Image 1: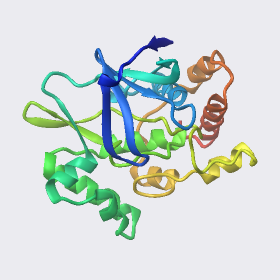
Image 2: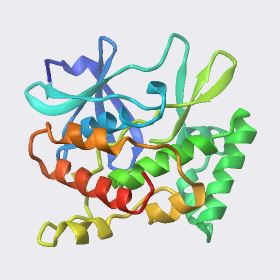
Image 3: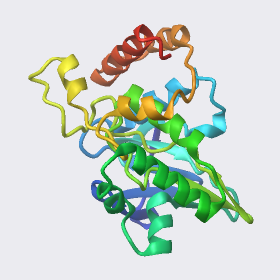
Length: 252
């Protein structure tokens, strides 16, 4: 667990997120995020640690570390961009080309399948890049960890030299029912899981998963052994519940 003092000069402001304006810090090769409405740093850590028990490559996702930023709980991650590389979110990619908000364009479509295929075609035509496998990985992870914040600034490609590649999975802080606007802890855990609203193509994680398919496997035995060593938290309880739930369904 880290402790870091970060002055205001390191603030990076990002526009267009679901929460309005999100403040992050970039210092000495690390991105820092303070907890805002819940235990986002803990959720980021648990989700990215879970992925180390999957069959994905380490370059497919970002690792987050818990700690304190100016004595406030949060997390940090290493900058994953190389020299000359640029992260381009799907929101910005579409706005740069058409001057429109892609989320509004998708909202006007009647069917989830139409939304998914529209984005796949757009990125293929714009970047000569097939992102179906990327979306498959992201959507499966979001389903497992109940991510409610997969807006179009949390999906991205990387411009590298003269071509595009898929970005690693990043920003999973509104997961495991932390900082969720859908949660009411007067209800049991099972009810709160049912209340989760997914993004960006459907309000149902499972509906998107059924369409896109399986993105990876997890060694659940090793994951449970690891979770047994983690301190007690509601986020840990939710992750344990979700792993057992999808193990039982034969998905993991």
